Image (tube, rainbow, N blue to C red):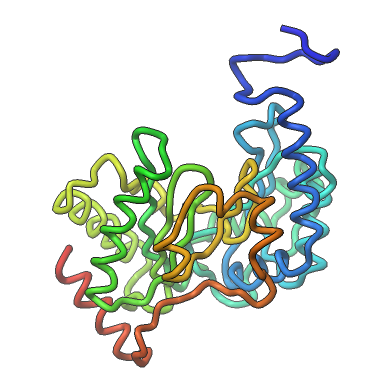
Length: 295
């Protein structure tokens, strides 16, 4: 099928070339906004960042394992991938694994070359040995592909986490779902592979007990699992951390890129970690109680 001089493959793309052009312009504008980049850098501390082609991007590309220690470094990768230049639709992910400080090497931008370097191969092979923690993530997605259906389950999960008074932050994951993240720093200290197995077991039991088998995705709980980075662009939506007011009054329109840029103050907005007025010690104890309940 040909449209506007371009070959349009209906089996690969879910949008028209005209719609893609609009998204590319929005993405370009979003990643030129410095407060956006600053928030991504903050959340990515201790994590790797991956950039991969979006669902609506017919060109396959990707770059793995870098840590944006500064805005300039993040900008350079966004530019190298053509994401901030408005050339290709891309998603920005961050690892669920928390890595030891200073262990992420600086790799070449040449994708073919970087995978052949000793630094890359050693980092890839020793990934788990370099880990010092792992986030507990509730990844909610609707089997109906409906964000408001996901929202109904997200409200149930939020109520349970609030009752346990565990530390977490929540955000829409992009177009159809939500993430609830208990950061690695609050998880119990144990061997990393054992911790990942424990988290998998907790999520499996949790979704079974609360009848959410079709909604909670446990596949992200793997050593190299990824989730959308907070404040990243996803096909016209922003993966936006939500405070209690934002969550209570959530609607899909309020996370659209155009709406966010006009109505949300991004500078120093942060992740809205729920700490319930408790000390770090008390929060860690509450996480242990939660784990005991569902393990």
